[in-house]
Image 1: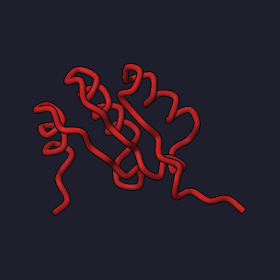
Image 2 (image 1 turned 120 degrees about the vertical axis):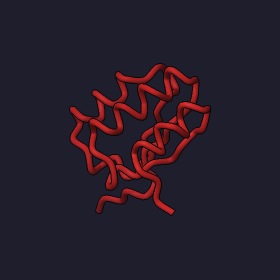
Image 3 (image 1 turned 30 degrees about the horizontal axis):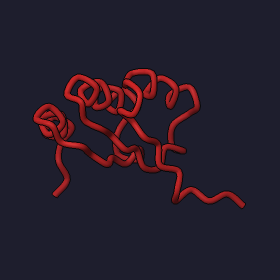
Image 4 (image 1 turned 120 degrees about the horizontal axis):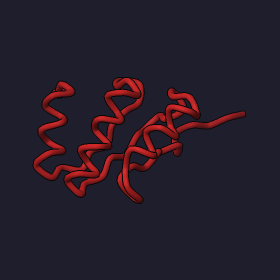
Length: 79
């Protein structure tokens, strides 16, 4: 079941750590998630961050505290 952004914000607000896919959420939504994670001492992992620009990634990262957000490039292969 895919949760709505509002439902995800609730999960973060009650202490849930999440792994989110950049293909499903705008940079603005991701910044909101990271901001809530920072406020609630939780963590967000962003899969497929290559879908965002470098500027958007910097903006998302600066929204959180150290360790609040992780960008997962493990599945991104360049040739």
